Image 1 (cartoon, one colour):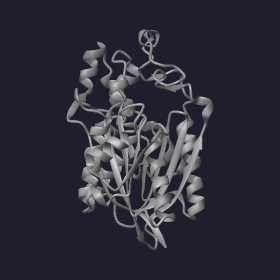
Image 2 (cartoon, rainbow, N blue to C red; image 1 turned 180 degrees about the horizontal axis):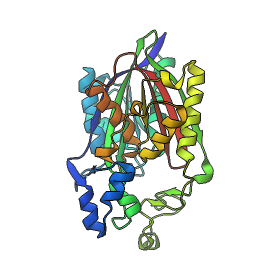
Image 3 (cartoon, rainbow, N blue to C red; image 1 turned 60 degrees about the vertical axis):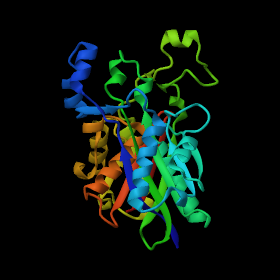
Length: 329
């Protein structure tokens, strides 16, 4: 049986490093202590003056291609998962396809907010499993949220950062390795609680919007504290039931890196050692749709991931949108 197998990974973060002390000075108060004590964040990367989401995605994609030993012309499809696109239209993926010279690849964006990358993995895996015309698909999670931050809002400016991660999936004859399953869950009643609300057809960019700062990302309302941990736990248990495994059988968990405490609480609810949850937020803060593939790439490079490891990727984002996927690495 043909399956979608993770052939390679790649990631890229901007070279501009901002440590917590920068925000102490920017906000004229001590935020370092809270960030390091509660979120474990010490530094993050922001785009340079002329960098954008496509720049980050192109670099991550190039690295994934190099690691796979493939040329861009070998790609059949590129999926870019992002909610910080290059433009409202056309797609970020079209720019990435052109700059990679992936002349034989179709390309499109997928926006499920911070769940976009895992949703894209699911879509790509099902293409590869069901259609022989697809052999190699590049899935990229890109995030340049620093472009949408109100630099005076300490709730957002200290948390969000930029980066991109890529996974190259190939269709191969595989016994147990590759894509196993995926789950999706949406709670649309929260769609007005968090996001960037100016710039679409519902609320166009206007002088009023700019005066109100509505072009920036905002937490409009406070989410229930337990929402991520409760939903992640439920989705993980659902995947485990489907695959006939126990939570402790999973070798590595990669979860949305927005709050270390939500990750710890999820692991505790599952009665799984917290060390099985791989985190990068200490050095990269929160990189949205990019955080899972960035963490995956780091774990692949440093030898944490081994062949045939069972990995779960579990994400959440605005909407609220949740996605989870299981792979045998």
